Amino acid sequence: MMNPLKMAEMLTQANKIKEEMQQKLEQTVVEGSSGGGAVTATMNGKKQLLKIRIDPAAVTSLGGAQPDVEMLEDLVVAAVNEAGRRADDAIQANAQNLLGGLNLPGFGPGLE
Image 1 (cartoon, rainbow, N blue to C red):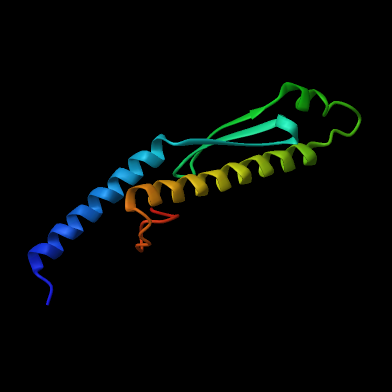
Image 2: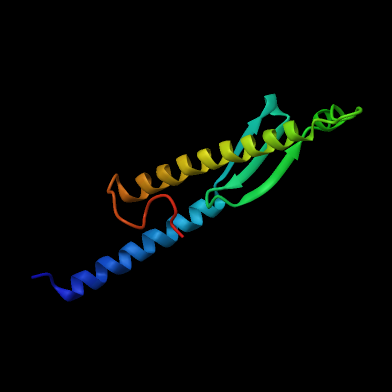
């Protein structure tokens, strides 16, 4: 039978690790880009979109009789998706560093 005091200590330690991971993820910043850098999305490790940068050349190329707004929208989506994948990688790397490779529920991607 497990000692209740030991169990409480383990839970406290697990909560401390989770809080530490959350802090690291807030401070982690990743970027994803598309269109050869025409659009860049910046996201933190909690997958919150922080910034979108669109190269002015990409906007001026929209001029004309029928601007290709759809292409710019696709570039934005692609940049955000790439940043999301990089944030997932950062989440997993942080979890592995803090947990030493343990695979515990609630400590991987989607820590919210």
